[in-house]
Image 1 (cartoon, rainbow, N blue to C red):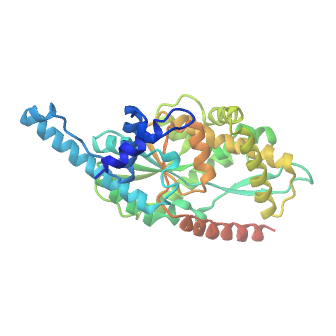
Image 2 (image 1 turned 30 degrees about the vertical axis):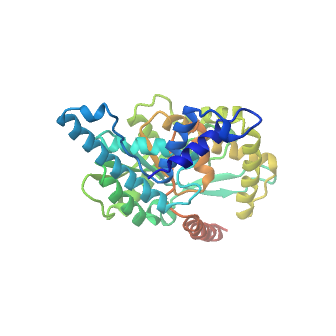
Image 3 (image 1 turned 90 degrees about the vertical axis):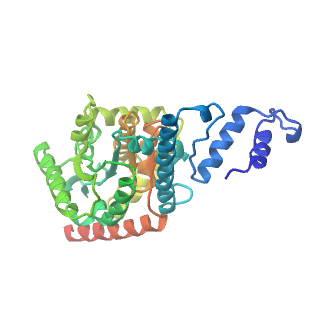
Length: 360
């Protein structure tokens, strides 16, 4: 249980006026105390319903409802505990959005629709166009490098946890916004026409469906694969994926973190292209990565308003940019340890290196 003395001591400390002062002489701020109680409860992963004296006088039917709600909450806490144990102590849920995660899982347990999303990137084959110019790319099948297939057993484990709460759909998203990005169009990045790119996306969806078909799933859990453009249409978004990515660029540039993001995207771009033996400078790296980063931010702009939980298996830059676009109002859970993520990227980058060596 919670320690009342600890809570009072912390609340008095946080209630001190600007400049500090003796905590023991400070009048306790009830709002501070409430915040600390919630934080302590989350640390213990216990979400309980406390009956007031008025509640104790309720009818037996209301008492039964309270018992049901308390049982439901205990199961939600059990699932939250499981996710916490799977991930990093620091970043298992991004931005300390424990409350939002609990809210979404409770919605699922209440019979409401909650989508669980996993991104599975498509393959890029970059080529040097001319010295000092913007590299060009072909989209390629990366079936052998699939994130979702790599983590298939983990998806099965997650499905068992979700089944404790209710019926749910896990959707593996194929990022069609990578294949149709207005910023890339302006730069002349794509070597393939729209028909070839559409064909590659549909091929990737079909391959993933085939490769994930044998995933063991409990009753009530569905695993599906969709293109991002079709997913946003299904949930009633009016803007196109290109418009969302453009809005993401604008949002990113207006962010207080814009300067730090710019520095990171240049560094990341230089590293990415040099690993493929392509020559680019800071300006080119920024030009190419700006629409790419804006794409992630645009995803967050949409998902902010949706009852979703993102199951993240990618490097933290991806989830952080989505989180930025959602203004922090998005539950993103990383159900793997850092060493597991590193092992995946080491495996994937090795396959990509072989792909590039065959091309050369």
